[in-house]
Image (cartoon, rainbow over all chains, first blue to last red):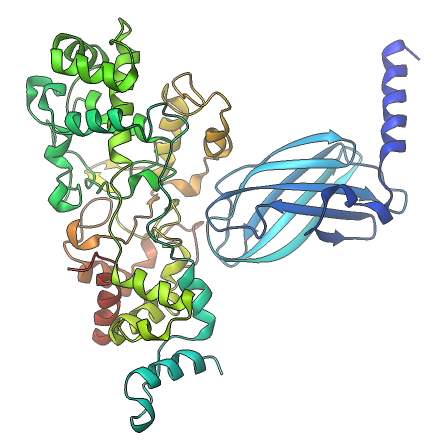
Length: 139
Length: 379
C-alpha cells in the first residue's frame, strides 16, 4: 500500500465512522424537515425558504443515511420535474458536502405552481443509479 | 361547500336577506392563489450588483440621461424615444424602431426592477447590462463604449451628473464610464413602479377578511379571474405579484422573423448571457459576494428553450399594446383569441403539455378582458 492509498483508506474509514445512523439522521437540520425512505436509504431534508416558493431560488440541506449495509454514493445529484408538464427546472443545482452524508444543494427553482417531483439520484460506479423521489405540491 | 364564503359575502353585500344570493364564480380554494398575486406594490428594490442602486443622485442623473439624445449616434434618439412614459414606457409599435428596424416588440419598463431576466430572451441578468445594450447596439442607439464615455467627459453637465452620482469625475476607462452610465439609467428605471389597481384592492380585502370591499370588484372581473385560475390555467405562468413567473415559455407565437431567419428566443438568450462581459459573474458586478449571481450560475440551456420568450407581466397592459414578443397581436382580444384557437402544431414536440386551445365563448373572452382591465391602475 502506497502512502497515498493509505491516506485514502484512512479517510474512507473515518468517513464511514462519521456517517450518521438512521435513528439520528437529519438531527442537525433542525425543524421542518421532510423524509424520503427506501430499503437502503433514509434521506432527511429541509428547504430554505420553507415552504418552497414559486419562482424563487431555494436551497436544500439534506442528510443521507445508509441502511442495510449501504455505503454513501460516490456521486449525488438533485433534480426536479413536473411530470404533468413534461419539463424539469430551468436551473441545475450545485451540491456541496460539508461532511460525509451531509449536503447542501443550491440554485433550485420551481418556476410554476403545481405538482413537482423532487429527485435525489445516488450514483456509484459499481451499481445502477438509485433514485429517491418525493412528490410536492407547490403554490 | 367551496363557494360558501364568497357567495355568502356577495349575497350579504348585494342585497341582504331580501335579495337572491349572487353566486360568486370564485371558490374558497381560489383564495390562496388570489393572495399570491400580492401584496402590491412590492418593497423597493435595491440591486446589490449596482453600487448606486437606490441612491437619489444616481436616480436623478439616470432620469436625465433617459431623455438625453447625446448618448446616441448622431444624437438621433434617446431611451425615451422608444420607452415613452405615456405608453407604459413602450412605443406602441409592433417592433422596435431605433436607428434600424428591430424584430421584437419594445417592452414596457414599469416594474422592471422586479425582474430576474431582462429582454424577451433574458440575455441579460441585470438591469444595468440591459440598459447598456441599446446604447451600443448599432440597430438601436448606435453608440459605442468609447462614444458614450467621451460624451460624458466632454459635456460639463454630464461630467457633473456623473460626479454627483458616483462621487468622482469620470475616469479614463471608457468601458467603466459607459457601464456607470448604464448603472445610473438602471437606478432610475428601478423607480418605475406601477400604481395599485382595482384587483389589488380586491385581493387585499380578501386578505383582511374585509367583506365590505369585496363587492366593489365587478362580477365580470371575478368570472374572468375564476377562468384565469381555473380552466385557463393562466396563473401557472402568470404567477406572483407581477403576474409573471419571470421565466420563458413557448406559447405558439411564430418565431420566424424573415425568410430563412428565426428568432431563437431563450436558447440564444442563454448563449448571449454566458458570453456577456456584463453578466453577474463578471467583474462589473458590484456585489463582491456574487450572491446575486445565483440564477446565472445555475441556469441551463436545453433544446426546449428554442423559441421560448419571457412571460410578460399582466399589469398595466392597457398602455403597452401591441402584444407578444413580436408585437403580432394588436389588442388583448386578439391575444385571447390566440389562446382560444391555439395552434398546437406550433408548440415544441418536447415542450410543455400545459397549453391547449381554450375555445373561449364570447362571454368568457369579455370576462377575461374585464379581469385584465382590473390590473390597470384605476382611471
